[in-house]
Length: 420
Ligand code: UD1
Image 1 (spheres, rainbow, N blue to C red):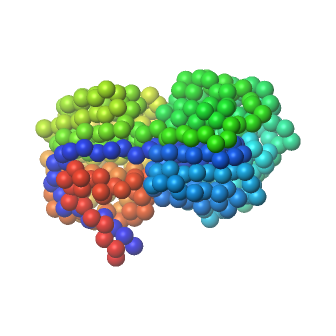
Image 2 (cartoon, rainbow, N blue to C red):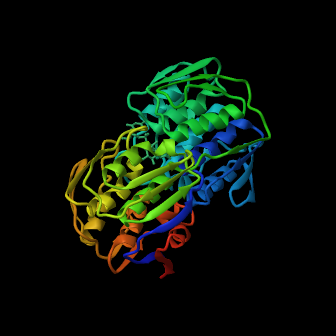
Image 3 (tube, helix red, strand yellow):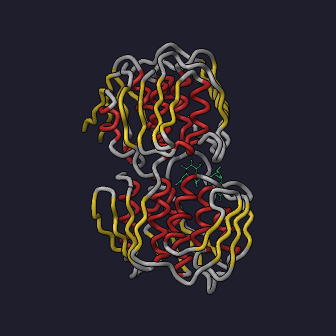
């Protein structure tokens, strides 16, 4: 078992380079199945979710060569199986994209119901609605979802709720379908646009990604031997922005798309931090005072991302006054607040609302990463706290943050990983 140990009270200073986006990469990797050839994907983050995805794809007959630390050559010419192993798919949520990709290419997929962070109920009804709209039949028994179709024919899909996963699966299943598919009330997250850019580079015909109406004109096949580079990670960038606020630091975040960070930028300016946008590709956050209280409501993009809610919670826990978070996406995203309370925070939560009565300082304690973003929040908390913090369940953090200790050490943090 590994834990992360942090000696706290450090003001982070320096420059950090952002990796490729986890949530884009975990959609693009299965999307290569639609290519039926070789694709080269660059700027792939070196995280455990990607390792798991590669393992799953290999069980289906996909050949993957690591050309460099962040570059994968993916050969999907020989798909030998349409059934993804349950033990691997249950490790994370993004395994649900295999369903759309395999159905799109092979007209058949059997995929174990996805796992991932325990943030509350994570139904797939909207994904199923999309598959069925194009003519597939679905069967969800014994922890698996099986989808089959004789033909996939484009249709109009209206999503009842704005869902990232359902929007992506609807795109994956319609790229090679006959005719036109329209996805109404689509999610607009940067990784949806990135997946559309990847598929279009491969010869798909998708317009409107990034708006709430996406139109996919089916094509017969995609191009082979193309190279695509994954977009920078919006959530990793936001994590470092909030680390600068919580530690009263001065961090320049390079290789990010500042447009993707507008909702976070607006809120941390309200908290009294200074934000400098450097030509749309880097952002410098400085904070030399106790943050002001602030209220947020998490929303689909371009609203404040739920995946930055716990990291924002750390900054709020040491802000002046009482801040409020209204979590509108997930039912159980406040588990981390109990861990912060062990460190001296004063947070109370009722259902999807939490109140953060700001304290002057946090104090190091043993804490447990309850999920991926909660883990990142605890790292920031440990760096800002007085004394020693020990974070357990670090495997959650490794799912989505590349070289997390190294990146924070470069900014001055005293952080190490210890085997027990
Ligand atoms: C993705 C992200 C996750 C992020 C979330 C919201 C990936 C791999 N994961 O998750 O990090 O927290 O977006 O930004 O990109 N819902 C339904 N029926 C469905 C699908 C979703 O009711 O068929 C509900 C969910 O329970 C949730 C809301 O819709 O309340 C949004 O979920 P969704 O956008 O689908 O999240 P994910 O794609 O699972």
